[in-house]
Image 1 (spheres, rainbow, N blue to C red):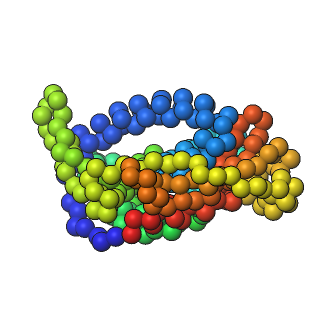
Image 2 (cartoon, rainbow, N blue to C red; image 1 turned 90 degrees about the vertical axis):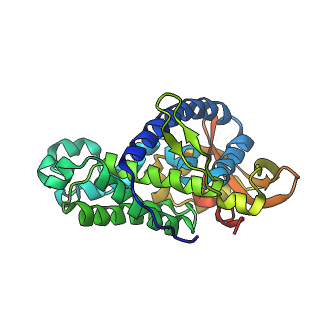
Length: 308
């Protein structure tokens, strides 16, 4: 994907962030309802996982339906294994440590690490960090999100380095990290889908400018993708359990004994005219009465590159 010159407009950024947060809250309510319903239907779990990725290239939010989120909130999982090891690195925190010990540790989120630039930033420098991280995000997402461990590790290490260069200090919080990542996720999605000119009804300020997305360039501005389950592949439960990486599953709070069934569905992505543009096999595992995507056994690379 070609790089574009970017500049940061603080006033426009503030307006966009306000509406983005409002939209995100609405989507969270919808997503929570849908997740609780679809969790009981393995084919829908598989379909939704692929659909979430292909619609906006969003492997980040797709992980909310995977085994990663089985025993803890997705955000807490990211904090525990990828954010806190950076924030509390010099204090001795290791990935997966009990977070209760954080109360006794001094991390980079302590205000003593804030430079004047951090204390006085009106959002301009933060915007520069987000902007500079975007190109690196694009590099990482080119390989998809299947190796989330590598993705989060590299992204947050780079973020710490970029922020230090711009702010001149080591200050870091989980809020800073989530804000940068989620902003990059949203921007990347818009680079695929395109955007329209939009204006606030009250202030009349423009909150979005029209742009042609990568999907639109290939499939036209009226494109629409539909995900559907095209078939099911047999998986032997005993063989599946034997191949499980116990250390990886332990991070999820899951063991092989917890899984009572496993299925694999082929999910196809079609355009309105019925043309299949890509497909992927999604493995789902059953724990209790709910189904979860096993991202470690699922290759979604094709969902990120089909339009190129």
